[in-house]
Length: 214
Ligand code: DX5
Ligand code: ZN
Image: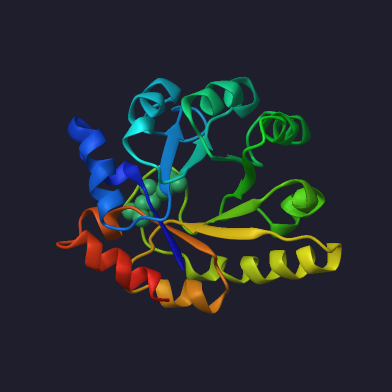
């Protein structure tokens, strides 16, 4: 299992050091949650902040956009150094145009679905994206309880991808820790985001290694 620590749970007074701490602890990706206070009831940070911390690590940046109009900001996030950009099917931007915009920059693209969104919403786009991110909490905040009933979505998406003859990575996000990771592994999740689970761990290196062992 690949692990992507979510910077949402870091100490923002030293975000750079926190990224270096997660790099040294063995993170496979850095997960950056961008929130606009409109798509979700919380505000975090945007492209200028990501650009400042990007040079601190070689670990790929997985940018999760929880914003109403992702299309308008794709270029900013690419220039800030995003390696993967995921955005929500529930956002206002045209999905196809937004995928095209990300793909034109030759970085990885992905779609995110909230817990109440049916899996079928991503089916028409599977052959043009690299990843589907399944929310296992309502987006907006770290530290919420894991929704195990979202996991079957992973099997549905993998089945549909096989049917379409395409390959897709599945990422899960929200409430993932040492207690819930085994369920993610059982359902074939490729990448797990973990905020509280790794940042609040006494020994993040051990915590990440344990999560990766699944
Ligand atoms: C929630 C974010 C998640 C969150 C995960 O909207 O997308 O990435 O930070 O944090 P934990 O692991 O604490 O649920
Ligand atoms: Zn996220």
